[in-house]
Image (tube, rainbow, N blue to C red; front, side):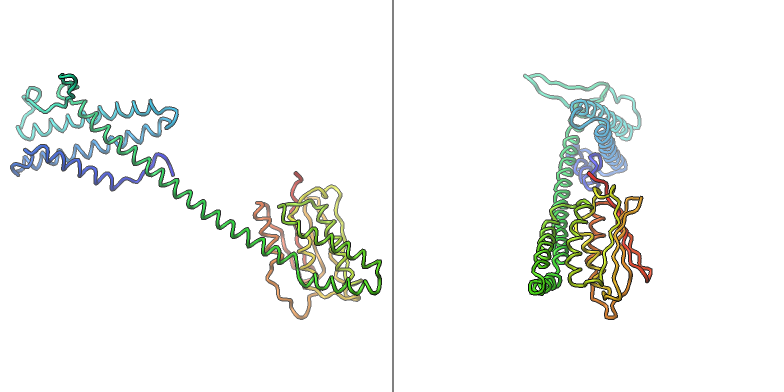
Length: 367
């Protein structure tokens, strides 16, 4: 909230009415006899109160903008009170002249006429500050009271704004927590695929009987895969080198199951291996390709990973879609896109031309 803005419409209306009523009650001669002169004097009184309030309000806001509220507090208070006192005193003086002219039809005798003067009693002495019937002491009392009211009003508005911002921040924090938990859940769903684990264990069981040495190698690769899976969410980014090590182990497990029907071609320039991408990006894309395409010895699925000179990683595969479409909730691609959005990075480019499916990923500069 802007510290110099305030919504005080109802305060101005209520304040002017209250001050007007108090003045009308004090100056009982205003309401002793209702005639045109009385009405005019009442209107002058009301006008002077409205003008005094508006001018005072303007000065309070003006000096709040001009001076720092912390370092220049004393200068602001002095400048505001002095200018406000003079302004209110002059407005009251002009109002007094106007009421005198309305009542007597002339200004003659105004400065010699007796009138109410504000004074302070101190040690049996009276102190007043009236010059040519301009009552600066009354102006000071009136303005300081209004100044205090507005300072309290600013304080209340600021406190209310701070409370509202705190509440909104807490609400936003709760929403972020929910989103984070949801993303973690979706990430778990996408990375720990129960079908993949089931198929891997079946392959391991078969290998133990047919080729114990190969089974041992398979088990080592499987442990590498799940170790990486369980640690992947510890960081927002990982190096391309780490992702490639993981995807090689992951591909080895897929290769045992699919044999010569699946090929992975890696063509990564050495300069980009220290660049970064969100963890499990390659696993999600490779899994997506395996899930949606036919894999046969005479109909090979070829997945290619390659970098470009523009620091991009392209993951692509030939399209040979299964006749029976696999149900998909697009968790894989949407998870990758969401991760790039959260990192405030360009979104991956997805292209499906009917012959080939490719995803172009921006590589993030190394730390």
